[in-house]
Image (tube, rainbow, N blue to C red; front, side, top):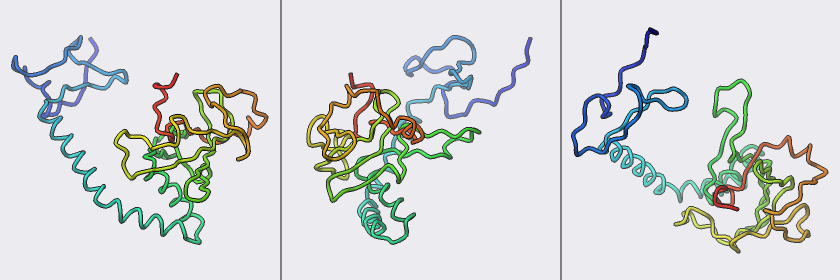
Length: 217
């Protein structure tokens, strides 16, 4: 028989003892339920889950109190003559307004670095005036190999629906120059002559628009 070695389960889980009949539990096959990566999976008590949720929303409320000061500092940094400071502040401005979750080359310790689906870099962002935002986009799930241009009309600090308020339900998307005609990006062609150049650009999916890819036909 193969010798098993594992760390003891944390005391905050209900796996360490038999729960009462009134406790919500989950059943799993085998003595040691495991997830796909073969790590032990513990069933946390409802009280512990509620305490973790309270701590999480406490951090969110503390961050929201600092939002005005952070936004003022970002607006100041966007006027900086330092290229690095300006690039970072431009990205941060878009993140704070649209709720993008930025990724990083250093997210993992893998030998081959890969960008996440919501990675935002300074080379992706070009702000024209106070309303137009230009993003250099590469979508891995759809046959789009062109930059996307859309207009954002009103971006509150917090959107109750978790998405920015756009001019239309689907934004006006222009391929190539600003004078190009709006195109439905869901039916975009897959014959871009600059495909090889855009392949070198880190992927950045349509989550920037506030849409969940699985909700789109």
